Image 1 (cartoon, rainbow, N blue to C red):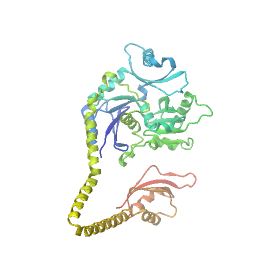
Image 2 (image 1 turned 60 degrees about the vertical axis):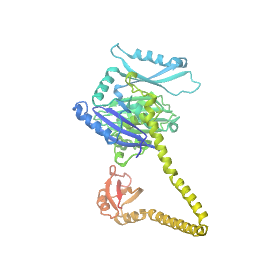
Image 3 (image 1 turned 90 degrees about the vertical axis):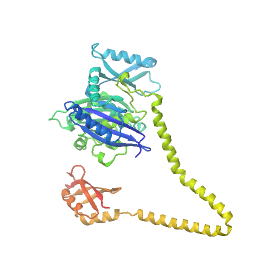
Image 4 (image 1 turned 60 degrees about the horizontal axis):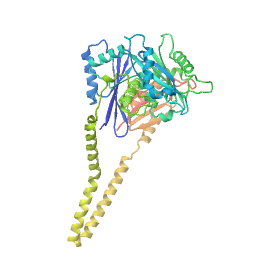
Length: 465
């Protein structure tokens, strides 16, 4: 497949690197690969570098568009409420504010800011200020440089997750959402209102505290911080991270409007990457930030001197390649038309020279066209063979009488089954014996339905060719 642009997101999650690649084709973005490199700070640098190089080589990726995501606990987020009169000198005002946060001359900050939306008649400006200690970022950049990585953009995980969720910005206007990133030991809650990031907080979860209790406590804190009134509603709670699916099951009875981040991702996702979608959410958000021209929150904590500068000539190879591709596509599209015109001219010339044979030649052409249409019609009939009735008949024969299907889908030969049964684990061997199904696997966890007492199951299988 031809990809016009690619971006790689690298998330620093404690001692691991989470890497996702996102590539765009003519229609949409494609989530092409995900990899987790564990324990990178303490491992041999050359060994880690080989793993990273293998990731880039496997997808033929360049290293000039890498977006680095820093942990939330290393970032300082501040919301500045300023009078509208400072709009013309906003950059200098922000610089003064940053200097006021620096305790000593040695503890400098790298920073960037973003002006949040406000009503046209508002007399105040709300600015999102993001800062990180110079020493902390310099240390990350030094380690990554030893691993062969020079990021083009540096942001925090909260910004990446926000940009990923707000892919369709218009759909989130005048609404309040809460995002939660859940790792095995930590959780971060982000509050969004009208497409603006108003709150972000990360805490460690105590071992004796359940995910439900920890999450509800942080949600209450977030609602208080953004001044959520009694009549205001939270549209949805969206969970991301390795522990998202587990947490959703715990809070499902309390928080009805709770969904996984994977439901809001609009990229093309190959089957081999779907299982990693929740774990890769932030790194995928980083890659998305580097792929699009105008992300919702556009910022870069990387110092100006270290940013990759591209002059106008840097785009010349890309432009020439695009023109060449367009010319080739044009040749393919118009090739048949040009050949038909040449053939018509030759036929006209021959018909003038051989008038007596023109009618017979025309009859042969008409007959050939009719036969070609018949052949195409028969080919279409053969391609339209529907095996769904065959599969459903087979399922009716092999499934026990106490088993009921709620969902059946056939997506290009991938069969998804969902329902309830008195003994769901016993169904997989029966389905494996079917002559029309293969590779039957369980998706998700089998659990008891509180109302019916039966097992709730989700299976996936491939259709035998």
